[in-house]
Every structure is written in structure tokens, then in C-alpha cells.
Amino acid sequence: MTTNQDGTTHQNMHTGTVPPSMNHGGHELFDVHEVLSSTIGALNQAILLRPHVKDPELLDILDRQYRFTLDAYNITVESFKSGHNPSHPTQSYKMKGGNDFIYGMKPGQPKKPMMNASEITDEIISGFLLGSAKAGASMKTMVACEVCNPVVRRVLADSVPNCIEMAYELAIYQNKHHYYQVPQLASQDMTELLNAFAPAQGQPGMPPLQ
Image 1: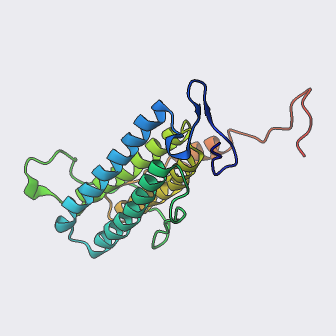
Image 2: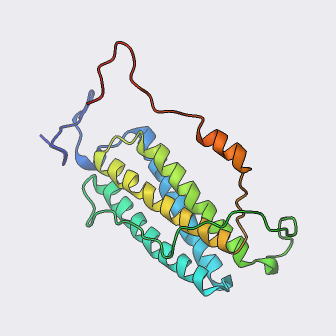
Image 3: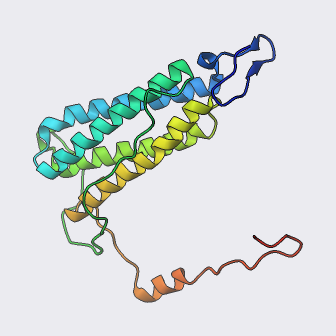
């Protein structure tokens, strides 16, 4: 009998015990394929964009995020194929710099699509990278909710905060250069919304929180 790493034995009602390498549902197989294909696309995009980066700070972000994403891709493939823990745990991505956003709008030209590849800029490149990180965060979150294999589920779930951190780093970079502008509401409206909710005091018939 085959026992999985989490101490449980998984069964197929028709064929019997399921070994770790086959401990995947059909839906899961398609979803993880989508995650891995999307990750390859993000990595390939970074390789194509890298020669066009002009700002050393953006180049540093691209390189650090590329190396981290490549490692995350490899351990996801490893755990997906084997059903076992990968050769090393999912790491935690640490962005550089602070997390202060600049609020307010600076007048500028309306944005529009490029008409020629020569028009590519650091603003456009950082936007591509931000889009990839956001897509990874949302896709991995959705997929991890329904993955049958507990190891693959944990690898995907643990990588979601890293995608969020990468997206946040890129959003701050864009904001600093006024590519990603953040308006604020009038102080009266903001105060009204901030005070629109109050803590719950319990519910009749429900035991108090311990």
C-alpha cells in the first residue's frame, strides 16, 4: 500500500491505491499546466524585454524577479511530476527599497498603444512585468483552492505572496516615476469611508469568541 507524505492513503474507487506521482485530479492537471505555461510565458517575456531596459533600477528588479520566478517554476515542476516535496522549500521574495506611494496626479499625455517596436520604454516594460506578476498571483490563488495533491497545493499557495510582493515592487517603481499615479479622495469623503464600518460585538445565539 502506498502512503503519501501527508500520512494519508489516497484511493481511486475503480483502480485502488493512488501513488504520489499520480495523486492528481483531471481538473488539477489542466490547471497546473496553465500555471506552468503562463510562468514560461512570463519568463520568456522577461528575456525578450531585458535588452530594451534603460533604467538600472528596473533592470535590477527584472533580474531579481526572473531568477526567483525561475526557481519557483522549477520546484513546481518537480513537485508536480513526483508528488513529493521538492528539493528545497518555496523561498520568500524580498523586494528592495521602501513601500511609500506618492499620491496625487501629475498632468501628462494620454496613453495609447505603440505603433512601432522602437517606441518601447521603461514605462511599458515595467507595465508588462507588473501584469505578469498580477496574473500569476490571481491564477495561482484560484488553482491552489482546488489542487488535490497536498504538496503541489502548498507549493502553489506559498508562491502567491511572492507574486504579490513582485507586483507591489513594480507598482512602487512605476509610481515613483509617475507611470502609475494614485489619486486620493477628498479628506471628507475619505474620512466618511474609513469610518463606514465598526467591529462586530457578537451574534445572538452564537458563543462568544475566545
